[in-house]
Image 1 (cartoon, one colour):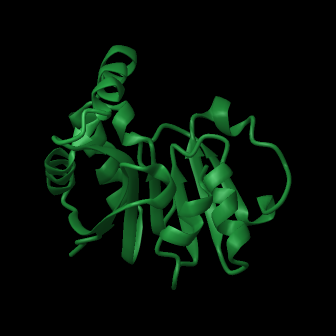
Image 2 (cartoon, rainbow, N blue to C red; image 1 turned 180 degrees about the vertical axis):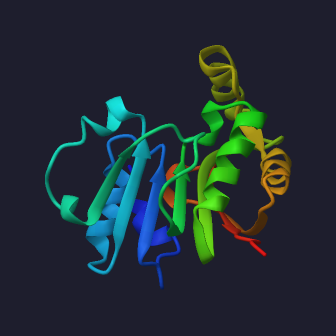
Length: 178
């Protein structure tokens, strides 16, 4: 279900993508396969990365088994956090965003793909409750997402609905490194 992201993510001028918390690398492979000039790094737990199967664009991928809360030993023009931050408390989500900011190449962007709660739509209430019970985390409103980005030292530059994700939104965040 990541096919639409290949078209929606800001890939122009990007040479290296980091998919943090990217599981088996399905999204990262789709991105790298879509453009021959792209390479990528997949960061996830060692037990997850060890299970990534050979095939396709694996020659242009670096697999890093590690903890997304530890410093990342890589740099990317685009860092993708797809359905990752909603698994964590606000404090831990900010820590992940700060790690992403540290790993950005100059002029790079962080793209966050998550569900956004809307007051006028009760569909997210069950998702929010599910995240609370299973992970001790939550789905968040736009204002709550914006606050997390600010706390991490990032500024929101674009916000839009994704066609096949319904209420999921794409957040692109410019790096404000000085």
